[in-house]
Length: 66
Image 1 (cartoon, one colour):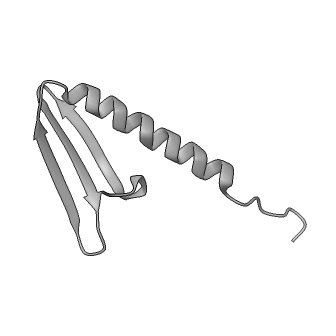
Image 2 (tube, rainbow, N blue to C red):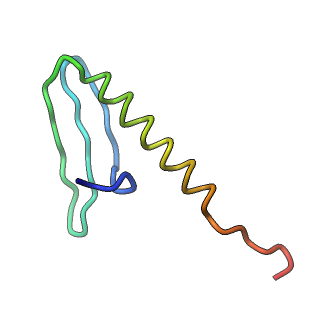
Image 3 (tube, rainbow, N blue to C red):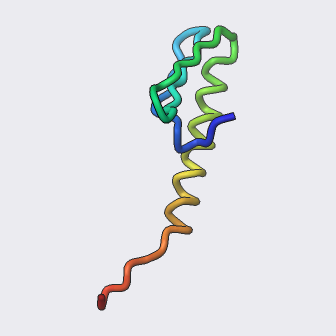
């Protein structure tokens, strides 16, 4: 398992889905062949978007007077 903030990029083309994950030392590339590659890409895109939106909501706001 990897947290969503470590996903560098992801894409699908035809029956292939590819995702790059950043680790402490290097990046790891996962390549999967499946007839549902575009569905996996849509799912990851939704999760990453949800993660980014949640991160924006929970980010402390800067005080404009300090």
